[in-house]
Length: 351
Image 1 (cartoon, one colour):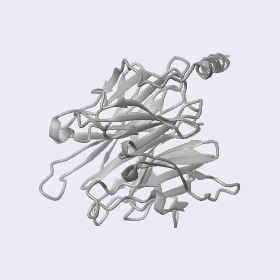
Image 2 (cartoon, rainbow, N blue to C red):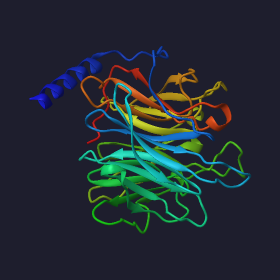
Image 3 (cartoon, rainbow, N blue to C red):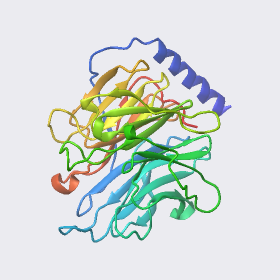
């Protein structure tokens, strides 16, 4: 009965949202800070976030160790569970030393939590891939990716994990069963997903495929260096269709996490805005006809925004949670956080 009531409430919210006219002006938000994390002694960075079916948010946090000119002494990864009211609980920790960071977070149909890991040490000691968060905080590796890859965004679709690779311009796919899956080749690799070259163009940062989200049998990927949203169809049988650019704008450079609402519009978080303000961050919305609308541009409450996540309960369905990564916290002393805004429409169900 409880599930039926929640379903009916969500359906009512959706009907109201579908009937509401779409304004053209930039909305005036009244954001609420839901949770704040420690900045650590040398800065910390929140990169991934996902919600389970009970409305709990799971956040990946990397606390940086001491840096000399070239290396880190130690990096520590943490996975936090955050309730809609902001109550926090540390559910897992992982030693990422000497050079590693936790990235994308996803939740499967059974509400199990997964987090991607990028190791930028050479040689590698742990190996880049995906870990499952188990009972008691156990971190079990379930996907292993080759050295030289940069697993970043993470999503589940029809029982398989899809992982964006920001270094090689690819999307990897793996079915998670017993043991460690080790795909031999990317599911999709294309020049449209590739990073730019910072040595040839200083406006590039070397980040390609980043955020990932599904709408039906279409996979959408944000490509940070080019401000590009790319669509890839999942064909019958599972093979990828030809990648297609559906939007490319200068203001979407440094695009990070993405999420669909129930009207099929894509919400895009960017690590920086366009005004040069500090702290910096942007939020954009792409319509089903690929028209881009600015929702927030350096509003003061975004700080290297990395991931938008919709609430998953009747009470939080029309709330959008935004993760502030605070990547430059080691310089400005800011800390990662989660802020929440009312957007008037629920998110597209992920499971």
